[in-house]
Image 1 (cartoon, rainbow, N blue to C red):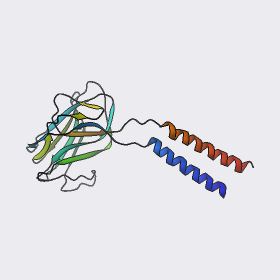
Image 2 (tube, helix red, strand yellow):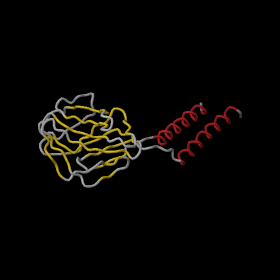
Image 3 (cartoon, rainbow, N blue to C red):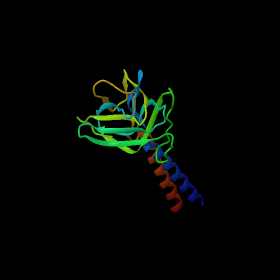
Image 4 (cartoon, helix red, strand yellow):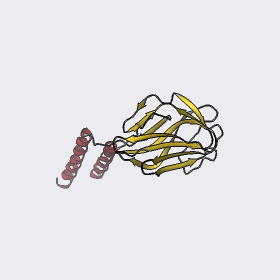
Length: 200
């Protein structure tokens, strides 16, 4: 019985350490904070062109905006070099579509960062391809524009920054040496306990 308890405890500790070693956290790969705002007419598109300085897997992006009329809003990502649409999603805060990430779009003049999470990461390849992050609405939108500074690591603006945009990605994950040492020690301890119990 004592051996079984030691085995379960050791496996639990190993699982916890493994989770801490390989856990991911989103990182900001592009941050363009707006300095002003513009009212887009219905079906007018505002885009921000970017290039990837390294292959970058993204899993969410946001525009600084409000939707006074509550009309459907479309977020999209296009590869301008190949002419292909990589991602496009239309969501309507008034219907609260359950297939989409919970989104609360501010109305009136209360603008805020409205983020859409991708169901699976999208990789933007490094090189000459230009990618456009776009927003448009079936009604008028109040959107942040004219950012003056760029933060983040992975994406760079092409031409003058146009839109208030934030993009999040999955950082490269490298195992940390200290947890690996602890993991190895735990495994050795487990074998030690089993060895002592099996071969007294």
